[in-house]
View (tube, rainbow, N blue to C red):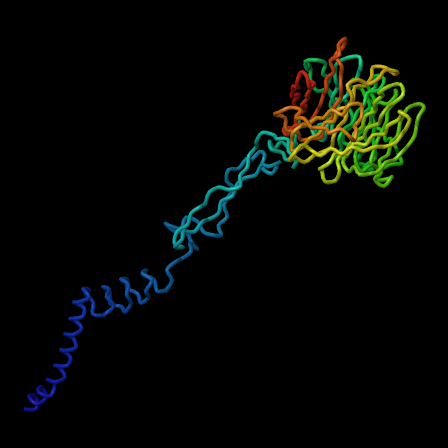
Length: 459
């Protein structure tokens, strides 16, 4: 009897439990999974993924992040972010010399952080063809920068006014002064003068003048900086550089030119406060005169013996802005002496560079007079230009720059000299310049016959 009474007492409890189970089973049947929870996946935990742990990141570990950042290597993590890597694309014999260096690779992580691999080799640089560049780079990685290249600015003379020919002097990147003669078609090559170029200032140009069969080379020194050095010789044989104008330090290279069987020199000297200083150097004359100092570049000058009663000293240089060529003329004769000035703007749309050069035909002997007047040559925007100035620059003449030649990109100041073909009236303008490849280029001709360029190469 007691048993029957207990059974009937439990009926309400069992009925409630069965109703609850029926509701849960019905819900899971609607979800479509086989577990008894209500999260919609097939496992028995309470998260919404299908793994057996209680986090929701979809993997089987018990942490809650979804990336490992490849802190250890695995099938997908081929490298770690802090792992060192040997240099790539190495050049064992030359790396560390000149531009040569091995490359580097870094470990790159995938966007989801679960894979990594080595990136491209970057930064490697091997030997290349040596290029003449202002940055003084060693492209072929042999320990010598700009080898074979000419640097600075060259100079040109007519060593024998009775002959139609020129001699060129250029400084090599190995601190040697090279010489080459050109009489008609260029023959031979560059010869070493054995002059010590290491005493030259790093930015110096060369200036030269031929007087009485002797060539004079003028340069700026590196010690003391700005001192003037001169070497005198013939052909390839020169005395060593010696200091001249020992009381003067020059801000830019002075200019020398033949003058009545000797030399005349013009300079912009710091000693004279930037004023224009003129000196004649010969056996019988030594004088000084000054004019307004508005020229800031290195300058050039010529002495013109126009007649038995008149001569001219013409000095040219650029102003500080590179937008004016200042030509100053000291006229002597015609009943009066004194300086005059002519200002030439650069060719339209261009700016002057480096420094200009002036040249006139040197008479073959004293007592004879200049022919063909004066020419000025300048570089503007990398191109060479020339202008004819007559016996001397005049303030009431409208001068026009003319292109000298196409295809030559100048990388130095030019220098010029005039020569006359023997037994003719034909006069040539000869211009020398260094191009952007470190080669010396000689341009010769005249307005009537045209100009041609000869690439004389490197040393």
